[in-house]
Image (tube, rainbow, N blue to C red):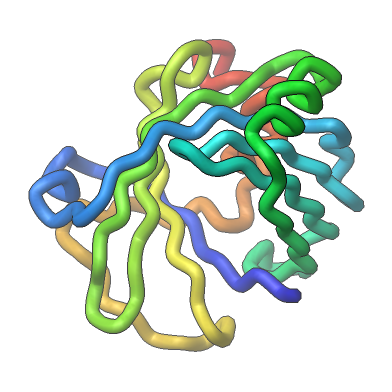
Length: 155
């Protein structure tokens, strides 16, 4: 129950040519404190509740627990969430044996495009596609929970 993830800015829309899947996501936070975020997410025709712990010093690793829930339950929980729902389109972009999740944000975060890659270990090597930009793993303002409070349009 551990997530090891790195985040990057995206330099161009070239990733779309390599995407194998695209899905719309809506998510809100029942708790957005860094020590324990509790997220409710609608992902296409699925729904999930996720709990994440604090990140380690490098920002790459943290506790993560996720469970599928009924869409009706997720819709009810979203109504209880803190202000600032996240709306984005996620593209899955394979890269070697791994996969980038590229998020194009909408609404108050329009114009922000972030790529994430989950790794088996913190030092796992991976291919860096030409469209991948600067790493922002350690910058908490790029965390979705923070974007719900301080959206990209206000930077």
